[in-house]
Image 1: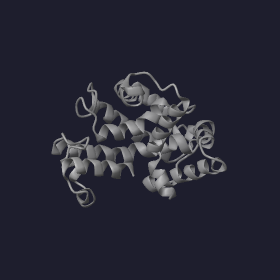
Image 2: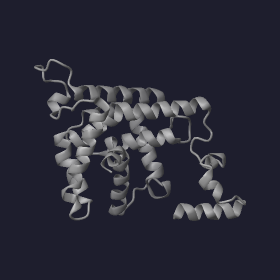
Image 3: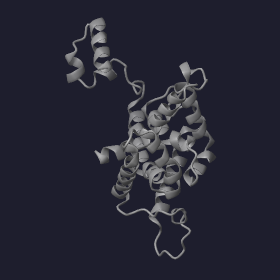
Length: 243
């Protein structure tokens, strides 16, 4: 409703027909309401390529970290979602989301991941083949290394202004950067990539504080809401599968 009201107000001020917004999806970019408006064609192609890389290489490891790893799920993910779900959803929603996350990994890797942290780290020598979860985390670490190399010393991926690629990367990395994970080999790898950590901290300070002043929200509900937004970005695919 708010978007429709905003469009109507803008159309009255600019003389544009409201039907343009429904029948011309490309109108907003033409009116420069697009984070990627200033990007070149090559940069736009790079954006799509990196987003595909995130979904293929990094997302399965994040789903495994938060939803499949037994230690993280029992001590962090399940209690948090249970506490923030209305009664009686808190009793079964975390389990449903965990099942959806596992299904997503199966769709991506075509095999069931190994659950114990020893298997994830590839320390079970009795296995005759490479552990699937070890492959998941290796791919994720390689993806993080590529992102770190691409970012370099820049503030954002394409200069001094954020684009949709920055939003996607932040959505994946911020929960991993901020969560207190008891079992966090992927988190430890991220902490070694200082430019990616600084990238997350910069966006948190500029866009998730009061008026970008660098002062965190004093209201605990607002803090929880921001954390929930970050977590939902990581689990958006799981929610779609569940529906």
